[in-house]
Length: 308
Image (cartoon, rainbow, N blue to C red; front, side, top):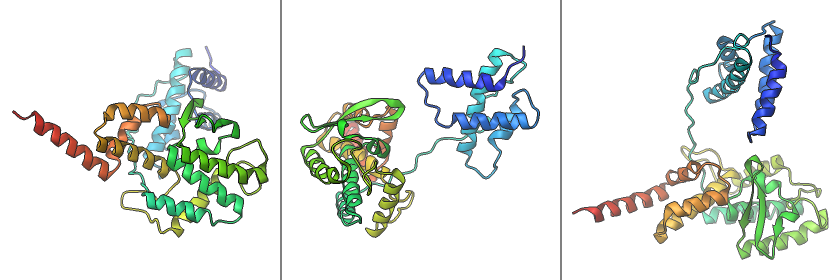
C-alpha cells in the first residue's frame, strides 16, 4: 500500500480540527515539511527527516524546534497507522523543551491612569479615544487584546452591563462590566459614531475601520516609553497583554486580603478570563511578589493554627 503524503496530511488536519483543535501553524509547517521531502525525492517519513526539519535552523529556540517536531510526530503517527512502511513512529521527548513562563509586567493603578491620560492626547483624536478606551477596557475586564480588537458593537449589552467575548477556540463567554466601564464605553460610542457610524467594530482606528492590532500595540509601546515604564529585571517590556495579567493578579490579591476562598475565586476567574486549563489561572499565584507574600503569610498562619 502506498500513501500519498499530501492527501494523508490533508485528511489528518481535517480530522484533528473536527475534534476541536485549532492547529494555527500546522498547515504551513506540514506543507513545508512535505515540500522538503518531495524536493529530495523522499517518499517516507523517518525519524531522521523529522529531526532534520525540526532543527533546520540551529539558532532557533528549542521550544520552537520541539513544536515543529510535535507537528511532524503527529502526522507520522497518522500515516504510520495507514501504512507502517510509509512512516516511522517519532518517539516523544527527542527535543526536550520545558515551557517556562516569563514573569508578567504588572501595572499599578497610577501606571494605568497615566497610560490612559497619555493615550487621550494622541493624534488623530479618533486613535486617542480608541487607545484610551482599549487600555481601560483591558484593565477593567482582563480580556485578551485580540478579543477586544474583535469586538463588535452588537457584542455590547449596555443595559445588562455585559460583553459577549469570543475567545480561544471560538469559545464565547459573557464578561460583566462595572457601571463605570459601561459609562466610559457610552462616552466612547458617541465619539466613534461620528467616524464609523452606528454599526461595525466596537474599537475603530483613525479612518473608522476596525482598530488594527499592530497599530495599537505600536502606539502602546510609545505610550509606555513616554510614561517612563521601563522593563524590569526578569520581565519583558510593558505590553498590552500585561493589563490582563494585572487584572488577574489584582483579583487574587483582593481575594487573599478579604480572606475569601481562593480556590473558588480562581475557578470564577478562570471562567471570566476564558482559560481552558485551570492551571493557567493557578499560575498567577506565583506571578507577583506581593501575591506570593500574602500566600506565604496565609499558609504560615494556617500552619501555626494547626500546631498542638
